Structure formats: structure tokens, C-alpha cells
Image (cartoon, rainbow, N blue to C red; front, side, top):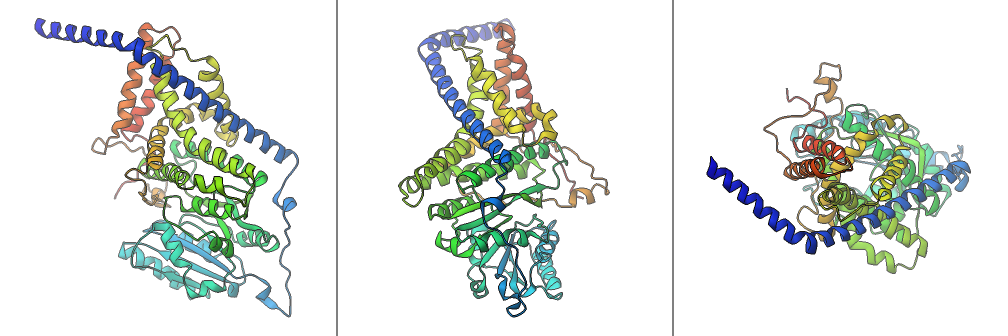
Length: 523
């Protein structure tokens, strides 16, 4: 025992000696530079949020509604021309093994109110499960027997995933007679009047290529994780999309719940599968051709948030990796484009891509989970209070405005976003470097009514916690790092920073063991 204690004591002395040797010449300068860079990125994020906050306030104050900015006239029946006055509309519903939601999505698409001879419902089924494939086909036949013009389309492979399915769907001969295409993912349920509220903008304004609706989450109250998602996405739809639409007539297409002018879609080069954000890719290319986009905040389409951690992680990887990779591929094309104004280029490159899709992810993790905790062990490096407290507080409050009903969950949202920032940062770096998993596409799992059905109709919610499940090692390591920094601050620090470090470490441990979201029993 004495020999073991002496060995431990000797190892501790060696580690302390090494730490003293590298601290002044290496650690301190690196940490100071890191703090400087992180504070710079924090200021960029703050300016971006304040700017968008001011713009959205002016938009609401002056009532810049879409009907006031663009011409909008409802269709008037003509006895002589009949239904020919209505444009031909294609409705695409891509799906992949959607056992839980295929009936809802097909039913909602077929329930759209529009002259029956001027609409085509196209179900693009990439399902690999024969049973699900047969069920989808039977559902299409059922609606077809009711007089709905519905087409069930399959292909021999899944090349290009969703982008490939949409691209293949546009090749059919009957599509040539269509003027517009509405796209709905498998869990989206548009209201019957969706086309009546969107198509007139496209018909009366020849420069508009896209009309995008807002998402409405049907399962936001399912668990704490879905409430956190609602807070983040509500800001995106309440502020980011509205500001882009009102000021630059540009925003990223959300991939669903939108209507495209087919001629604009084709002019932009159609669907491409070079990244995992084919919707954003198309939007940027169409914008560079001079087309305008319109966002309708008052038109909401029901959909489902991922309620399991596994599904949410896959979704966030795609949403973080894809934009970073698209930025790498298109930044020079945007800069050298001659059809759009300089201000629009700056907005797309700096605000839309660099600050929101890259800086926001990297700074959230690096600053608040790595650099700031490290400063407790290096008192020579001081982070100013405005950078450590005031800026993140203002950013957080501005974000929370989008979901006032969840203000009491603000602390949980901060911890959740900081923890997820590790996953998003990793995905962002993969996208920028075009490393492995850059084109990984895994369809987000939808539960539909499975949760209620398997819980005896009571909507019982359970947290996922299985020791045998895969443990997320990076989250585990960061959790231990934060615990270590917290203990050091508790013993030697004077600013009580250890309180935040302990709480954030617990959040990382919870995420590491998958103790987040809902759990649906197999039986």
C-alpha cells in the first residue's frame, strides 16, 4: 500500500511539474487567443440577433403583410373557361418506410381543396419494406377509387435519397402540364385551403419562385426534448424566415410545406443530391438566378418533431453538416454572381451561412463548454463579464421571444442547446472538411400515433434509459472535463463558476447515456 501511495504521489508531482512548465509559455497564450476569437464570434452572433430583432419589430409595427407587399387576388369562376383558369398543380409527397404516418400524409394531400381536374397527387415511395410498400399502394388505390388523381411512383434505387426521388418524380410526362409543385414530407398535414392561400401569390407575381408556409408542431408537448426543439424552431420561423422574406426576399427553403414555380425550379438546375440539404441548395441557386421567395407566417402546416434522441441526433447531423458543406461548395459562386445585389450577397454569405450555420454552432460549444471552463484553471486569462454573462443572456432572451409559453424552461433550453452544440459542431466541421459521413442521410423517424397506441391510449411518456444502448463517448468525456473544471474552481476559484459547470456536466452525462426524449416499447 505504501509503495502504491508513493507511486501516486510521485505521479502527481510529475504532472504538476509538467503543468507548470507548459502553462506560461503554451497554455496561457493559446487560451488568450481562444478567448479573443470566441468573444469575436459572440459579438457577431449578438449583432446578428439584435439586427433581426430590430427588423422583425419594424415589420410588425408597420404591418408589412405579404398581401401588402405583393399582389394577391383570389380566383374568380368563369363560365366560358371553366376550370382552365386554375393553374395545374402537382403535389409531391416523398416517403420512406413511413408506417406510422403514411395514411395521415396521403389523406391530407388528397384532401387539398382545388379543382379535381387541375391537381395531381404524386406519392414518391422509396420504401424498402415490402409490407409498408403494399400498404402505401393500397392507400393510393383507395383514394384513386374516390376520384382523386393520384399517382403512385417507385424507382429501382434510392440514389440521391429525397432529392433523387423528387428529381425522378419531375421526369414523368404528366408533370409537363403542371405549373407549380407543392411538396410535403410524410409527416406534414396541410389544411384543405393551403393551395388557395399560396398559389395566387405565384400567379399574380411572376418574380416569385417559392411560397413557404410555417410549421406547426403537433407533438411539442410530448416531452421536454420536443419543447426545447419548439423553442429553437419557433425563433427560426418567427424571426429568421420572416426577416429574410421581408428584407431580401430570400430564405432557406425548409424542404416541405412550400410551393415552387416549376419553371424557376428548372431554371435553377432542379434537384441536386450533392449535399444533405437539397432544399437549401435549390433555394440558393434559384436566388442567384434573381428569383424571389415569400414566407407566409400566418399559414401553418401541422407536422411532427422527432421525439427520440436517436432520431433527433440524425436530424441535427444532417441539418448542421449539410449547410456547412453547401457553404464550402457555393461561397465563390455566390460572391462572383452578377444577378443579385451586393447587400444580398453579404446577407447570404455572412448572415445566412457564416454566422447562423457555422459560427453559432462552433462558438456555442467551444466557448461555453471548453474555453470558459478552462479559464478557471488559468487565472491569468480573464473573460470579461460582458462576454461571459451579458452577451449570452441577451442572445438567449432574444431567442426565447419566439416561444413565450416556454420562458420558464429557459435554463433547460440553455443546457440542452450547449450539450447538442457538441454534436452540431462535429457535424459542421465534417461538412466544412468534407470528411466521412458528409453525405450521410438517415430519414428522421416519425412515431405518429404509435406513442399513444402503445401506451394504452393515455399518451404515457417514458424516458429512454438502457445501459445496453450505445453510450455517446464524446458527451461523456466533455462531462468529465466539466466536472474536473468544476472541482478545481470549487477548491481554488473565487467566482462560483463551479455551479454552472456541475449543472452543465450533468446535462452532458444525461445526453451521453441517452436519458433524453421518449421511449416507445417494441411490444
